[in-house]
Figure 1 (cartoon, helix red, strand yellow):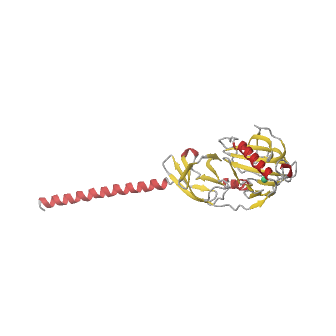
Figure 2 (figure 1 turned 180 degrees about the vertical axis):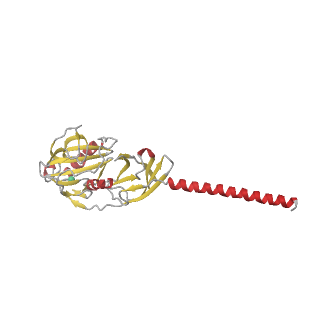
Length: 310
Ligand SMILES: [Zn+2]
């Protein structure tokens, strides 16, 4: 073998060793990356519905492994506008309540979550239009009957009372951690949420649900909370408002009497007052409204929502 042949063979052996090493090193790197990605998949977002209706509340949760301090930011995007969402803790796990106004624009939205470990994930859902029939509705004679003047007084006083109720603050953290309950022991619904009442040409939405309750029926708090308002309104009658924290409040209308003064801490099922026929009411009943971050949402859908916690 000549000197050149020996050098050539040496070069060939060297090149084989060199490329084998590079290949091996490269292969290990790729495997590492793959393994890393598999072990750090983005957490999943769990929605209570992919097609909520106008006037309903969406409950957003995450995988079991996600804690509230893992979440950097959650936004809701619709029509190219992004809104940051507040994350609360329910059952020691992060959760978000998204209330949709009765007249919120339907369509597909994207929920996007960013985590401090730089992972991110998103999910889309579609807000569906709610069926909102309109029925004729009378003004009680005690409030002026079906006249334009009584209608105008109704609209003016409702606006004033709604403004007052919209200023009541909610404790940032929820006082509850499990299912909500009905406000009466025998909940018989006599009027549903979200339909329109044509009152002397003016359509007003029924933003609560009515329960059958003869005068004096004990009315109970739908969950733990603090009584933040008691008083008597022209249209809502004798009213109690309970704050449940986390942006959730319950309003009990047309009562005959109040049992719990403002600042009383109540537990789920505690009696807060007794049903009546006060204010804009044609017969004894209880009107329950539930507000989530200031929006009146469907109370029945809200109460049923909590089955997703178990
Ligand atoms: Zn009602």
